[in-house]
Length: 127
Image (tube, rainbow, N blue to C red):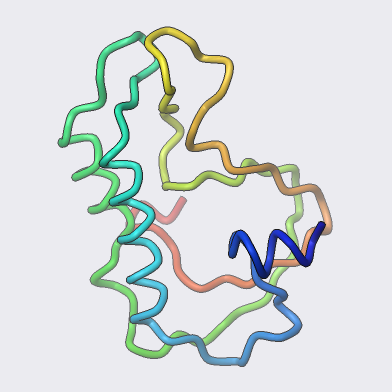
């Protein structure tokens, strides 16, 4: 399953195989591609209204893409408390149907205590 997630879906990377440097342009491209995928979908906020472009503009600003250097020094870390893994830096949820809040499209997964991870960048709000 891990092989499939890493190699076919391209949702994760094996951090033991990462170099100590990561190309900034690759990260920027990946983040912009993901943002564009969501922008093209018809999604709704918790109260049922359709997501407006300003939502994505705020997300993009907080993604701090201009703060990504051409070469990133990869930092390794461990999760120290149960954490939500969000697609974008926001606590707001996006939903496929109005007022159907059973599945937040931005909730990618959750990370348990002790999960290793590579840190490449942080949001503008530092959260």
